[in-house]
Image (cartoon, rainbow, N blue to C red; front, side, top):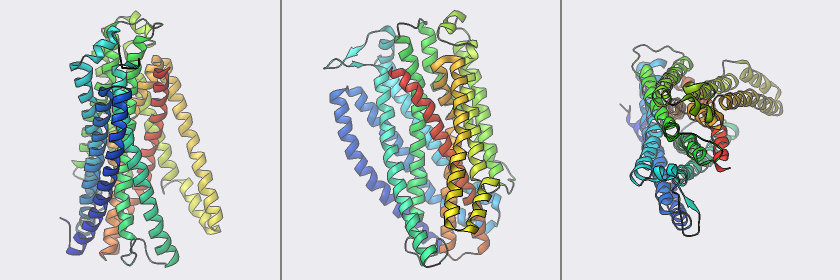
Length: 487
């Protein structure tokens, strides 16, 4: 239920604002994407242009569906807090809304990859032609291979991510700053006060920037990670210096796709572990982390099963030629390094951004001394926080490389984002809770209701930082393997 008439009216205004923004943005993106598709079709090949359009549609759909559901979930979170006065019950509703964005990211991304894979790779024979060495060339001599078609799909996802993340991000920060500076700083009225005309715009921004923008961003990272491993496997086979069998190449191509699919199933089970639990604790951090860890653990288990099915029957000499130093378990161990490093980066992000730990408390203490020290302390803590994450990524890259060469690094990137569904679900729950607090304030609900939504919102700020760590960390690994493919 959406609650009383005023709550429904406010939620409707936020929903209208978010829909208006995303519809206008998608019209602009569609025109630009159409021009790019024509250029790709003329200069490269029509297959790349079509896969580019498929990527743009999948990414756009994920952002649209996830954002729409977020605008329906926010008021229901507020109403649940009002009716139950329970932090645990309210968390479950907010998380349920976030899972739609998470499942859309994983589902649409994999749907698009499999569509391109089946149509161009299988039905049109691009993959067999590449493996057999029968490479077609376009009208001006550029090789047109399956790797080029896959790159088109990734590029389509990227252009939507750029517009959603940057366009939605600028909108939300402009609205947020306008509402906070004018309202709290100049007029000394509470955040989300109905007397502040920028409040609705601020809440709209949470949906278009932190839901649709984040979803498209992580979908693009997810697709890039999976396809970087596939493309690298195809290009390694074409390298005259590497002698491996066709069976091994097909296993190397299929492994990232099947591993990612297993991660999708694992995330569904991880999400269910929270939503179906009868009694949640009043510690949102603990419950959300548990859901993430269950998804990650099941993903690694599925990865071992997949590796055994695909690589165990390949000869030891063949595996050695491909740089697999630990036999058939090499790819799954590399993927596990990506999974573990992603979790570790998330732990560091939580430590440096959660109100429960020392770094954030030192920044709060610095505010006693004025604005200058607050900024200085915040900047120094932020800079320190990146060091341990960078070291973690360095160790993961080195370890994955020692296990399975550059293919291992690519699979590690896939591993880091293999449970992206849960990561995005946990991340998206934050802006939904933020919206719920705004609706509570504008509807003049009890202070206890706002306290519940604020507690969830504070945790959401930390989960957002964790999500960004996954996106940036996996991009580092995927970019490294993509550069290797290019070389």
